[in-house]
Image (spheres, rainbow, N blue to C red):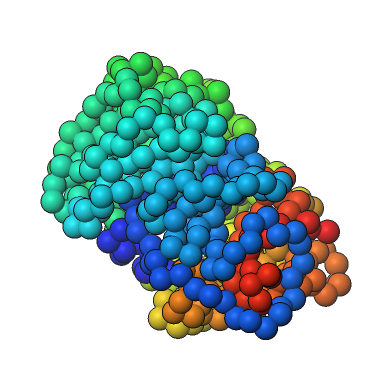
Amino acid sequence: MRPISMVSTLAILVSGCGGTPMSKSSDLGSSDMASSPSDGGTGDMAMVKVTGTKVVGGTALQLPLNDYPIMDDGTLVYQDKMGFPNAVPLAGGKAEAIATSAAFSIFPKAVFSYSNIDQAAGAGDLSVWTPSQKTVGSPIPSVITVTGNNAGTWMAYLKSTSGDGSVADLYVSKLDGTSSTKVASGVAFSTDMAKRDACGPNWKFAGDTLVASYCVGNATTATVVAVASGTTVTLLAGAKPFFALNKDNTQVVVSDAAGNVKVVPIGGGNGTPIDAKFASGLLLNGEDTLLYVTSDMKLKRSPLTSPSPTALVMADVGAMWRAFGATDPAVSPDKKYVLFNKNFNPDTNSGEIYLASVTTPGTATAIVDQQTGLLQGDAFTTDSSRVLYYKNVKSVGKSAVVADLFSLPVGGGTPVAHGTKVWNSWAGTGTLVVYNDNYKSSPKSSLGDGRADLRVLDVAKSDAAMLLAAQAEADFYLTAAKDKVVFALQQGGADQQGIYVAPLQ
């Protein structure tokens, strides 16, 4: 795992869908114009342990470092030895080049890439590729960052209007660049994630409607708008850079800077007040229920219809946990539990870890009562029976951070240690967990984040973890069904190296 302080201070980022499988069905991700090393790598010649089917062979192939690489139609996007994006059917088939640029990002139905890069502005000419249409439209110049809707029909992007990329104009258009509408001018932009959290821009598509929050110039409060069919409606000015869409995309939750949170129609209107002390929150997936933290450190929930807040935890709630790289806070898949911290250290991405009920008021359970806990990947098993968390954070090399992986039943019990020097972990079906331990930094010739032993384990059983690949590339992903793992191998002989898919059992 990479510490936030390292990722957020890069002048140029590759950050599309947040690097998480949940982003596959979310429009919350955005892709900043980016560049990657391009010196390739050759791998080691000794044969290594590997399980699975090779999807595509070749030396120095790599999965994207941050973006979820499996598109909606089953196309797998990977990087060649130059860092350029290529596509191949995950089920097997012919590979093809997408772009001759190492600056790209992946969305469910489109890949965005950048050329003619202005390093000072962090901007480039934006091109769009889809599995069915290939190159779509003509390049759009001076783009800093972009997002697309789930249907693959619309996109929103920022065009730099300053030499350093700190000021931009916000546009929305069809994927081919037609029907373009300028939404706002002079939008403030920063690659510093702390500044972006404070003032955006944030955006998400509700079908073909763009909802966005942004600050203009030196403003310290945001404007939240909805854009549909070329018409922009202001939902709230003087706002926090927060919004959330209800399950049928007809209502938007917004809050002013003072914490007065309300739900408004997506087409605009006065809305219905919910609370006067809102600090941060989310709508529970598939429910019109707002789960939120207040400025006086309480955890509350409220329905959007006839709002009626209920306090779940009465004190010492700093913020709901959000696993490193994740878009949303750490709520269990069954929406019965949430993890929060009292204090959070952004330099180490660590804090206390408390478990609270999302449905019933009560006292939270301390899982890690010191500011040494960390979340990475999935925070719960898929069946919601166990919390997955990290302790004992260690630095490796110049920038990598690893930790020890634990699980704990949500109903209480004894924590179980599963691995040391773990880079990442994802929840498979039921109580299966895929993780990689024994992390080592990559050789200078590699594009990757490092290498580690890839394993699968049933955390509800006492059986030993099964080794899938020895010293595979550190970044790996699960399929949407969570029944397969996709990983890259740069070790072994030339006939072993490539991208693999392995079933989980």
